[in-house]
Amino acid sequence: MLALTRKTGDAIMINNNIEITVLDVRGDQVKIGISAPKEVSIYRKEVYLEIQKENQAAQHISIDDVEALKNLL
Image (cartoon, rainbow, N blue to C red; front, side, top):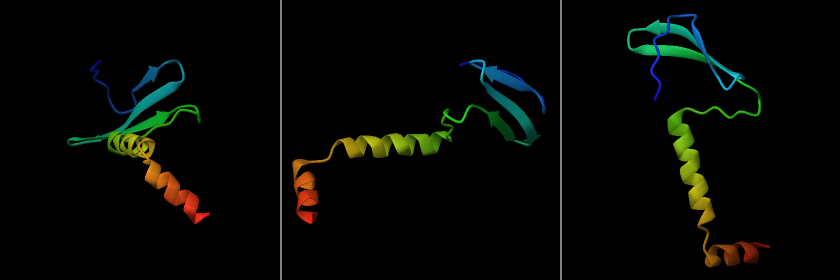
């Protein structure tokens, strides 16, 4: 992990096309802005982990589930 010290208004660049800017610091909270191409997905970590969990659950559909879906048609 790279740890950096930045002040309000300072930014860092990632991979030549993602810019992260420190917008505000208040107490123990830091507000950041992220500029990235539209095709780059940006999620809070807790949201990203939930998406991963749902994707894994969707991959484990049983044969009974498939048959039940066929019966709906």
